Length: 603
Image (cartoon, rainbow, N blue to C red; front, side, top):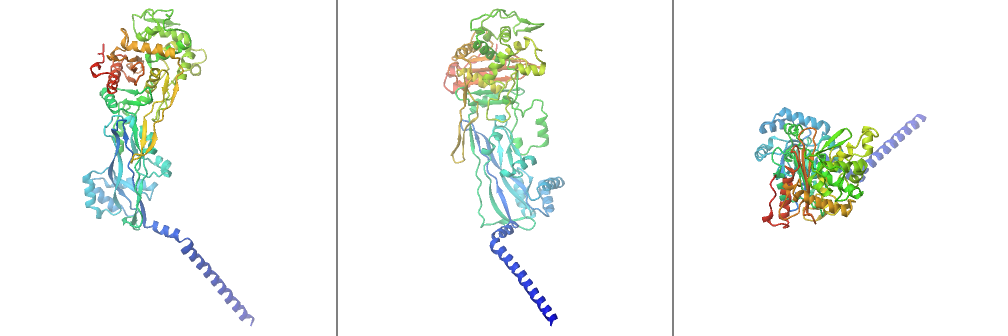
């Protein structure tokens, strides 16, 4: 009896256990089917559905006169999408395209090691004949597909290459940094110039479509009940660049010339032209630069990838003398008529060192006006001694030298204005003499400036001391014409007195138009060009040639800075080049008649 009760109890317990277990199972099944059904259905679909990106076209870049200077063209790539058993198809594709299958497979294995599920581009930028061959053999290429993408194109080759910049494929480090911002392996990224500066505007938003795949990841066809999402093209940029002026500036730098030219509208800070030579063709990067081309660019001793307009620093030479003059005038050390104690006899002794003037025979006794016109070094040596390092550096830092201009381009450098603290840190307290400020006063020694700094500061002198931040963005619009961003003007006062500016402007007119002026090769009949030559000392070779100018003297519409490396005195090469740019622009603006467009011959 007791045994029967025990057995009966066990049976009941077992029954209760199985009922409980079955209940749990039924409840879990109901939960899976009802509560989490949508989630698991989505997981199941993911095993047979692939989301395929539809790349957005990159925004266009226009000049102010609506010339397209950077555009996007469709390109075809052969892409591996299969995740397993892709070897035979890759061998076939390599054979029909004339590729080394071992190299192709090694590249696939390398990429899949890091990103095992991602598509791999086998061949980019296919030509029409290659596309036709692939389509003809499509049934023999399971797991491979033709994919379109937007490829950057520079219609004018190397012209404006530094301001436009370039795009190239993401590397693995960039991908890891940007993958949360919807970047994919194989995407192209702006890596220089405006392409980098305005990447977020230009890149657009990719669309997508859904395709069915088999267990090996091979695509079987579109899924009609899943809606295709169309891509949104990037924003179009309209620049301040005057394309005719840009083309002229590019053409004036003939083969072998190194240097830069920057033209600015003094009334707004709009950059009208920006040239750096040598240049490069951005298309080399957008089509996937070869190792040979890359090595050729980076090992070129003339540094074609380097933007000399905003990243190269040079002693400003005599173009700096107007800032020394402004410091001396504003501090009351001189006026425009005052003669300094020492006349110029071709040199001046300071301590145990002789400082020479560029004119061996000397200039005699000069006032400030004539010292600027004739660019007398001895006169400015004396001003440097009167001002000292502190007086020179204070004025420079106040007007913005030693700082970036703020132009909307990446990697601008600030140049260098040495201060007393700078010298004490490097040379020791009191370890330099009067020769240091004398050298600084003529724009030599440790002082370093960029072409864009001088173009913008001379523009401000012409604009009665009102400085506008140089910029390239005029407006940004969507592909259907909706305004995204407009032009932003930022201005400040230089802090130089109006009286000093008036004296300097008149002297700069004399440099170009007065007998004995060093800038006569930039003279234009019918207009007062105000400018200054400069010779930048170069310890590594021949001196550099500077010329900076604005025109007309009153209410100027253009300021130009030109530097030509290893070209000697500023009057020989840089001044006539700048004169041609100014005369072209004034003609386009109708300020002077074409009959008056004569630039003086180089003396």
